Image (tube, helix red, strand yellow):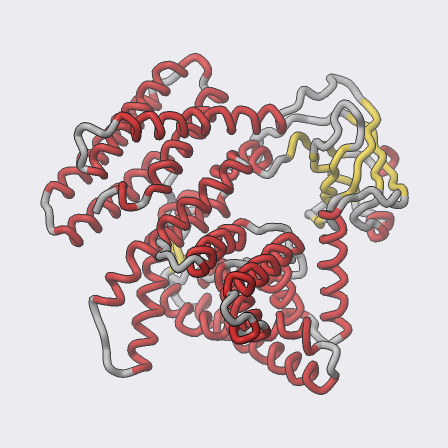
Length: 518
C-alpha cells in the first residue's frame, strides 16, 4: 500500500501541511523557524514511511514542496481578506442582510455584508435586541447601524470562537442597542446568493401550505434545503445524543437520491451514444441545487466526488474513491483554506476517508447468506467505519461519544432514505393534490416514527459517555495508531506496529515542545 497509488493525496497532504504552517505563523510569530523546520521534517518522514521510498524522486519532492508553499500562501491570502483593522471609535456602517435573523437567548444575530467602500464585502455578526422590528427583516434589506466593531475573539467563549468565525469568513462582531440601528428596503442589488436564501424560504412556505408542520416540517426543511432553523432544541438533542445528527445535514445520501431521480427522468436511451450529455446534464442540475442550498460542506464534497466519477465513467476510465476524495479536499481548500479548521469539514472528510478505507475489507471479511443479516452487517460495517473516523474529532469538539450509534443507524439509514426521497419528490408532485396528500402523510408518519425511535435510544442507560480529548496532538496520535494498525492487519508486516509507535513518539515529542513554547 503506497501513497503513489493515489496521486491526489500526494498533493493535498503537503497543501494541508502548508495551511497548518501558515496558521502557526499567524499565531506564534516568534517560533516560526522552529515550527516550520519541524513540520517540513515531519512531512518528509511521513512521506517516506507511507511510500516506503527512502529516496523520493526529485520531481515528486519539488511538486510536494510547491503545494506546501501554495498552502502557506493561500491561507495567508485568505486571512488578509478576512482580518480587518477596525476603527478604534464609533462609526456608521451600511450593510446587506444576507440571511434571516438567528434567534439567540437575549438577542437576534444578523449576518451582514458591509457595503461601505472601505470595508466592502466584509461580513460581520450584528447582535440586536429582541423587539418587533426584527420580525419584518428579510434577506436583501439594507441595515444601517453605528458602533465600534470588534475583531473576532475567543475570550469568554469556552472554545476557539475566533477560529470558528474566521473560518466562516466573519471579520468582526458588534452588539448594538435598539436606537443604534434601523433597516431600509432592498434596493435590488442583493445578489444571487441572497436570492437563493429567499428561494429556500419560499419552498419552506410551500411545505407549510401543503400540510407539513412541527417536526416533519423541520426535518424536511433540513434534509432537502439545508435549513435547520426550524429544528427545536429538543429535537436537536435527541439526534445528537443518538449519534445520528449527521443525517440532518445535506450530504452524499442526498446526492445519491437526487442523482437516482435524475437518471430516471433522463433515461440513457434518450441520449443513445451521447452518454456524456446525460452525465453533463445531471451534474449541471446537481450543482445548481448545491448553489441554491448554500454549498454545505458535506454535499459539496460528495458532489465533487460524484462529478469526477461521472466524468471518468463518460470517458470509460476507472475512478478511485480515495483519489476523488483527495481532489475534493484540494479544490475546497484552495477555494477556502480556512475551511480546514471548520468542524463540518473535518468530520465530513474523516468519515468518508475511513468509510472508503475500512468498509470494503470489513464487508468482505463476513458474507452471510441471509439477506437481512447481510444488510445488517453492511450497514454496521459502514457505520463502524464512519465512527472510527470521526470519534477522535467528536471527543475533541464535543467531549462526548454516543454508544448506541450502530443500533440507531440500522433504522435511521432506511428511514432517512424515505424521508429525503419524499421531501424532494414534493417539489414535483406537490402540485397534484392527491399525490401530495399521500406524500405528506407518509412523510409526517415516518418522521414521527423516527423521532420516537431515537427518543427511546437516547433514553437508554449510558447513551452518551463523556470522553474528552483536549489536545489536538492526541487526535493525531489516535489517527496514526488506527491507520498503522489497519496497515498491519492488511499487510501483515510487523514494522507497521513499529511505525505506529514511532508516530506516537514523534507526536508526543512535538506535544511536549509545544508546552514549552512561551
